[in-house]
Length: 72
Image (cartoon, rainbow, N blue to C red; front, side):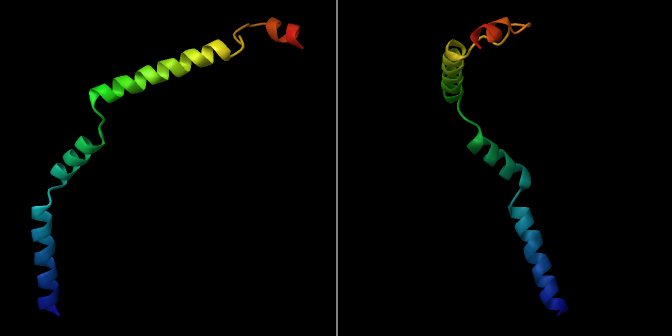
């Protein structure tokens, strides 16, 4: 039984030595992080959506609600 546990411990130590958590995290970060041009395209798309919503949305910034009272 001790031989089996010793063998498993040796395998875990070797596997931990071969797989460096810092390099794995760096690789995942490189894979997940988008390129600068993709970020710019996403920001441009968000600006277009915000502009479209600003045009279609009613003016709700009136403090006393006068524009809402006139509509109803």
